[in-house]
Image (cartoon, rainbow over all chains, first blue to last red; front, top):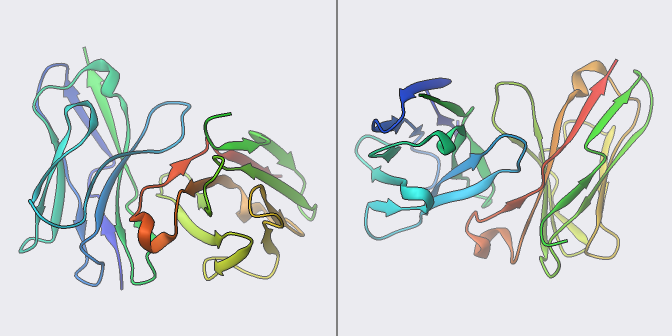
Length: 112
Length: 117
């Protein structure tokens, strides 16, 4: 079955500390991979995407993600988080019909 | 407006009633998507329009759910004989081009929260 897995439902981290949000995809999901972010009371917005090329993808707000084919992972990272990064982050992959398959989301909680 | 607009933002209804949720996409976006998001889960695909036609409705859970986009812009998601299990946030998204060429870059509205009592 096609699936995208975000193992952590919540990740608490201190402000200015680094963070990694984990995402794994099933091998039946295409290697078009995405991270979306949902800030409080706002709609989902695209953070970054991997379609091909360099395995390290840079997105908005200082986030980056690395595509790892052997580990079927696409983890999201930021070297130093800010209180404004408080949001829910969703990983998604694309199925054979070019529709997105979504993970359950990870809430990033920034501790002052 | 500049973004995807969804109305109502909140809807409370009784079991068995009929509900309509509206989505006004970004002007010029040909692709429009409906998703359903339950608490603690990611969005679940319902239906995708390319222009006026439903290009993929494989995600609609049953025949109580129906969506239209008669003029290729505004879309309405219609739910008949609502059930408590239909309670969720219904998300609409649009994209400048087709699902294949849009490569997953969707622009989302803030959602319509439906509560069925």
